[in-house]
Image (cartoon, rainbow, N blue to C red; front, top):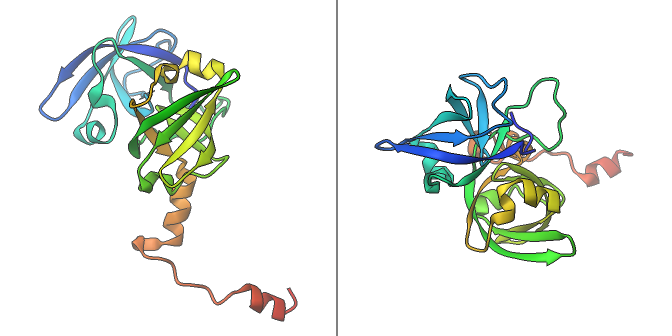
Length: 215
């Protein structure tokens, strides 16, 4: 599990393409001390497993499904990436629950300056927007952000200068693609209310019933 608080921005050193997969070598510094083979690292919000670790880099495999559902397939050597190690049990929970499992790819529709902050409007598919609520949380390229506004086609976030400077979000421009992960709590609630993909049976309990019985 991750919190969406990016620890550093790394750089793609090399990409070895397979038939339907890829192996990424990612240059890093801050996250490497204590990192072990088998540990999870979020790369632009995508949970990957470190399969080898060097003095200034680590390597991870990216499977077919991940390439299809995220922007990792568009990375090239030299691309900057957001990096976060899995949350330790004794760590501070600074963001929100981030699983590292990308729901969809969104598109930066527009940006605008608002004093020191920058507003980003992100176009997203309906199956992601259904979980996006104003003042709720969403992960964009692995960054935990608060939703400031939602429409039928997009949502907006207001980003402070620190976040823009220490993540790759500050370099995003209209038309750029981003990885999106909606708040997992909404997904679980929806699933519990519609087991087997079917709407749950309506309860006979209504406001009128409660009023009639003195509640």
